[in-house]
Image 1 (cartoon, rainbow, N blue to C red):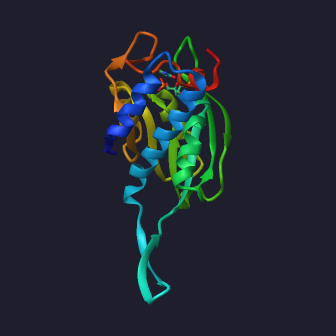
Image 2 (cartoon, rainbow, N blue to C red; image 1 turned 180 degrees about the vertical axis):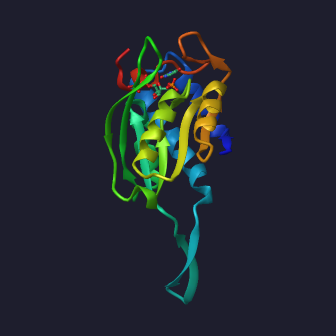
Image 3 (cartoon, rainbow, N blue to C red; image 1 turned 180 degrees about the horizontal axis):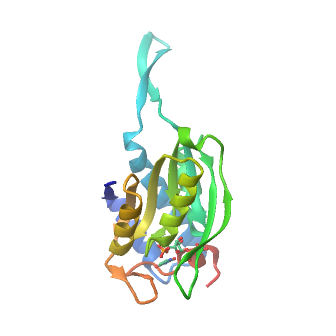
Length: 209
Ligand code: PRP
Ligand code: URA
């Protein structure tokens, strides 16, 4: 079973409160989502492998460390995942970015794939799938299905707010995928929205309320 980790650093908790608040407008919401994504990237990259490298400081030859693992691809689930990309790239600037378009049908709550564009050599890469919301888990499972179908083998899922229902669905479907979230919320409401949550992440990011 993949691990599920809540990254509840005080800065993240504070910023999450700002975006949960319904009075927070689009501009500020977008800024703070990226700030949280940056902090999450720091934690998610904690276990990245490093190797020795010989360098010369201005004073002496020295053996130091550099990242050695698989090249990273950040994969936002459109639309709302786009809101996390710049923050993640701030810390992992050499990452490539793939896109998976997935929306949740409002009637059935089932995910519908409408776009996919990814870098080559997926088996050799570390994918970070990002989406602010893990609600029923349907979108995350479908997006990861699509990535695995194209050869991806190393996947982590990073979100801001997770519902217990979605965590279980994702862990059951993809036990090899570690999940990182800024929060584990209480539950879903009858429309599949996370409570307390932050509302519709895509609408709040893009001002389409
Ligand atoms: C939201 C969110 C997730 C999905 C989560 O996207 O960004 O992708 O819902 O719900 P689930 O876990 O029940 O599948 P939405 O379908 O609203 O599309 P959008 O990002 O284009 O607004
Ligand atoms: N998608 C969202 O954007 N918000 C929720 O609470 C659930 C799904």
